[in-house]
Length: 340
Image (tube, rainbow, N blue to C red; front, side, top):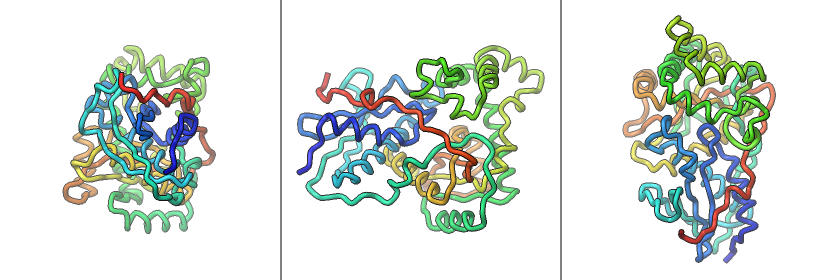
């Protein structure tokens, strides 16, 4: 049977960490246990206590990283059997960590997965999209029609509905000072920030210049936002409608209601890589799934299969340029596998 040593695990972890995570928090950590199995744990210091009190988004982020690990192992001809541990809520393995999954290496050779070739070309684009070709739209529609967990919304009226709903929902959640404070803690609004190139949302990821970033941080992290909101300017501060309307489509990603976030996160990464194949970048509108009133409004206009819940909504379209992935060093992703 093929085995993974500490050096290989670090390389695998770096590849797995190219997966998307909420606010680019990168909570997935990896270890080898005494039996040579790979352990996936969530770093609880990276949970969004205000934006994600139930840890669902952390679980989804770890699930996406798990799928990245599966693909990285398959590229080396290594197959695995996954034991999903998320619902067990195991927090006594090491202080500050929650065991999420255990991967046992199999004796069977695994073939590289076709989607893995799109990993380095997947990125988030938070600005206006470029025009979309008819061929790209047709390929997207054909794929979405066959996907069991994707609902396609396109056309001016549908996009306008989602754009307006997103702006209203964003204002609702941004009116919460605690949410804004937590968001700003994960924003890297100056190149001098010590974590500018490793995690969180920096100026390049946010498509902001230095002056714009400085102003955004000053407004969001102070009472100025509340003052502007009382003056009727709050909506203008969070509005994205004009950018949203440049998207080729919006994709509603949904999964079975009681599915583990780990499994949903794996599927989410595959979902994103699939539309990357068509030359599209994505821009999440997570607030539409997180805010119950917004999620209900979407379900009424875009019915989902019975028993499914909305996980996320992404604007998709061609991006005029690419955005680098800012990630933690591989060494920061690997833990000692011995229990504390």
